[in-house]
Length: 121
Image (tube, rainbow, N blue to C red; front, side, top):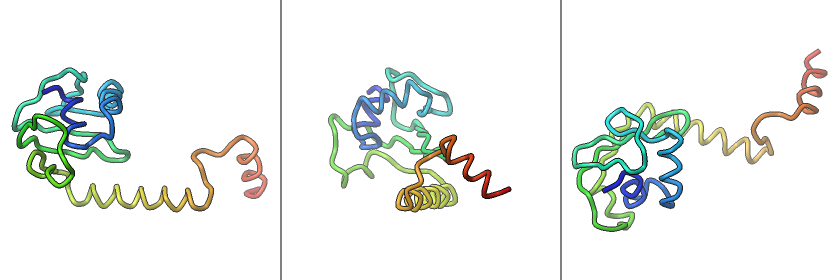
C-alpha cells in the first residue's frame, strides 16, 4: 500500500490530500528517509510524521484493506514516540491554545512590533 494512502487509512491524516501534501513537503519519513507519496510500505516499517516541534513515530503492524474506525487503529499501528516528546508536544499545543484565547496570532505586524519597541525603550 502507498504511504499516503496508509497514513490516511489509519487516521494519521484527515484526508488523503493532506497525507500527500505532507509527503511532498518532507513531513513524512519512512525508516528514517523522506519519501514520495507513492512509496510502498510493508509490515515492520517505521513511519515518522513531523508535528512541530517533534517527530511522532509509528510502527506498521498490519496493512488494512480500507479505511478503518478509530477503535481499530491500534491493531494496525503502534506509536513508538517517547513520553518526553509527547509531553513536549502537549505543552506546545497548550501554549498555542492559550495564545489563541488571548487573541495572539503568530508573528506581530510591523505596527505591533513598533509599539512593543516603544514600550521596551
